[in-house]
Image (cartoon, rainbow over all chains, first blue to last red; front, side, top):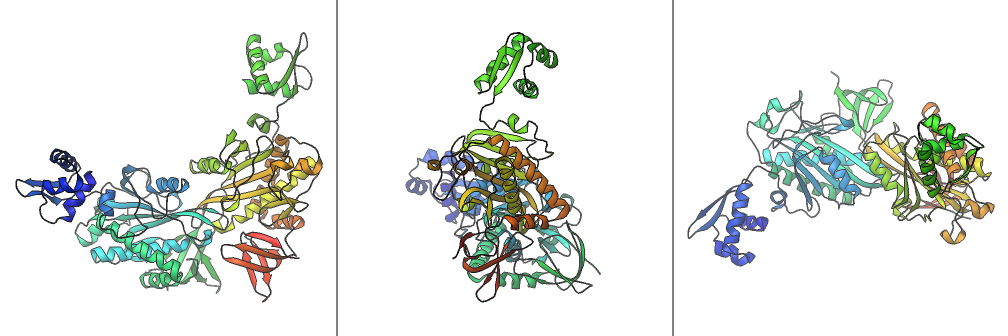
Length: 318
Length: 318
């Protein structure tokens, strides 16, 4: 009922009378008052003026599913949202939901993570209320070797969404980082559950530093606020990410991977550079010259041999 | 304590006196008697003769972890065994244990499954007490695209183990079936949890029809008992599977995939045949002429094009 009252308050840009809410939601005036009090406890600023009614003045800076879903306009992404004040890791929660059969587009988000993680079990700093820590369940018809495509697709979508809300356009460092001025703004983590030739589900995780201060970030990291000297609504950014992600995901299904690669190349910091890459197989050095159909990075080493990498730590060699 | 008493009974091939057990295990004679009674309830036939002591005459036909571990002699495989009388699916249980960090070699086995499954969510008939339904957790340093190797490796190990215990040597139908007289004796299911380039863990499942009667098997299936007209100890077969699997797995680490492929080819029903294969991408027909380094099947179609498949339903075309 709180959500439904909030919906009315949001829809009416000025005041809405208790009578009107009472009529539409079939709830007593006393019932409305009780719910308004509850909403205020959650941080909503609602003023009540005799003869005019209620008006929503400000919403709290929280990732409540209702806030994200409001006017979201997607078909799949974010139709189901699981929200935590604090969680070990949204990846672990989403993975568990995936095993239990949660539908495609299910989102797990949290205000803060106590064990936020990146690739290969590395940690991801997740100060409470400052960033976006969210994982999305996908159920694509892909083989395990094609799943890296989704990392690239997500990077393109998140960069696009950030640009739309803030004007800032992050560049992409292969495979999974969004960068501004060579500092890390966001990371993308892709994990999968699969049979040998068929993915069961994929969890794509996004860690994005929005309003974090420099002291809350690890060395080499940055936030939107640090760069633009201004705070932004995390809800608005999440909404744009879900919209952009859905748009690109639908496009992948219809047109294949090449539009993604095309856009990815526009944003790439890695292609055309001489790089050194470290992965479990060892170190490779050479020119990063292309992305292949699986999302792998193609490197031409000094022997002229072409090496393909699916992930790893890239350093640009000067 | 029951297990420790059982251990003594097994080790002493004739009688062992209560006094001796009492001395070694620091337990009263009354305590021994109580435990012997418990063991009898579990189906152990133990006789007690005055002045001689106790003697184990027969063990129940159950997959108790203690039975499997007795004289097993492996280093990793089966060091931890989770046993169920009945379970939905040993795959699901093992996957959950994998997420929770269970060590490599952990085995989940059950007398019966209510939702036993094969590739692509198909069902696997799992009559209680008649077959081997077991899943093993592995943590190999492989990329997701290399995991199919483990299906082939497991097929080789299980065929070897069956031969050792029963004399019957099943052939392998690519990718995951063990066959006798063109009837399915066993199936192998490989599932994984991974990052884009690095497996977190793999669960290899084995469904093997041991003492099942024809009426308990689906059309096209067979059991060891059906073929040889004789029942076999499932514990003994599981032990041989764990030993053979560990041996081949260690060999994979040291020598790479080619010894596996070599042995696999010896047992293959698929190579050198004209086949039709159906997978999510469609139907391919041609000559199955080789296995590649990832465990994929290479097929030369009528245009002379070489197609690689990682999994699918194979029909030999005559």
